[in-house]
Image 1 (cartoon, one colour):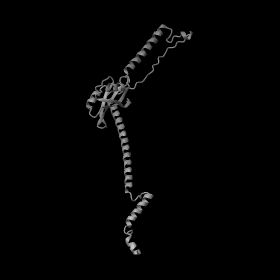
Image 2 (tube, helix red, strand yellow):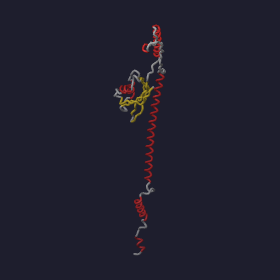
Image 3 (cartoon, rainbow, N blue to C red):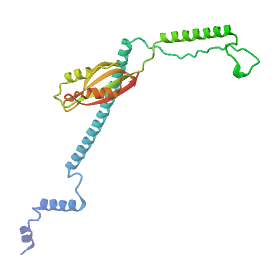
Image 4 (spheres, rainbow, N blue to C red):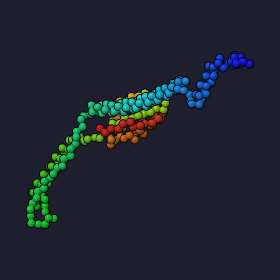
Length: 238
């Protein structure tokens, strides 16, 4: 067979693209895929970067929500204090005055144990006693005219219902039905919690000697058909 006949029967040159493709695949398998031949890898990298940025934005959004809630609580506390100041007269600052009763010293030749601070004479004793009683009476009268400073606190409560079907208007009505000496209810609002559930955020002003947070929590949780729990969101002395 001649050389031309061999070349005619051999079809390698007509199938050269197939051989080139096979060679390319062989070298890719040995050296790893080419960056230009797999656009999906760059797409996956872009998706990962997008997911990472979305998570970062979600965390930043949660932080901003927390800051907004803190600002709302602080604003609510300030509003409650302003309402209390508008409803009640200005509290007077009590000052403690020490009344010094001057003693009448009489020098005599006796011992110190026998010394009479108001004089040895009977008339001087009566005069000193009278002055002493007048000063004590004047001090007592002045002190009785000063209003006593009552310690008060502003409390912000979070009252949580059982679910999203709880009647929040009835829940607030139950909370405000709690009455005690030294307790004054203030403004309230509904704050979303999640899954359609809202909590009641309500403020009050209490006299520290008469009403405490334990009493409020105990009385409010008695309405167990509506109230799941009670938390103290803010507590400030007035």
